[in-house]
Picture 1 (cartoon, rainbow, N blue to C red):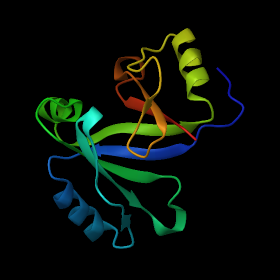
Picture 2: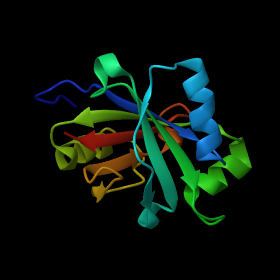
Picture 3: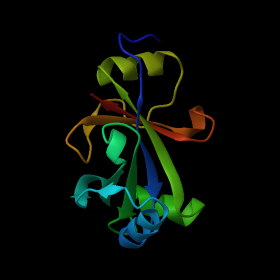
Picture 4: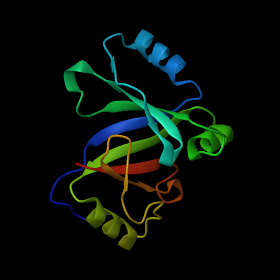
Length: 141
């Protein structure tokens, strides 16, 4: 399962019931954080914003995810597990190839084909049942 480029951390997704309250908490913890505009992603049933560290805003971001309604997967996640770590996202060069390699390696995919994420990039998720309990997202560079 090799790739021509190494995967790097894109972001860590945090599920929250109140995105504004979470932003305020993170700003108190790390005043230097820059906060992006909130983006509604209706297809995924969430509102998201990213928290960027000024020294390295292209990698290692925090993504806050607030459900739009009780039917979204993030709302169901919060109901079952509570607020907190939702997923870890890595970048990859070719998401279609990555998904094929992961499938061949026996990973359970939530997305068998890429879909478009909050920032307009192709994304896909690997089920937490096959990753030791952590939902993993891949984002095409």
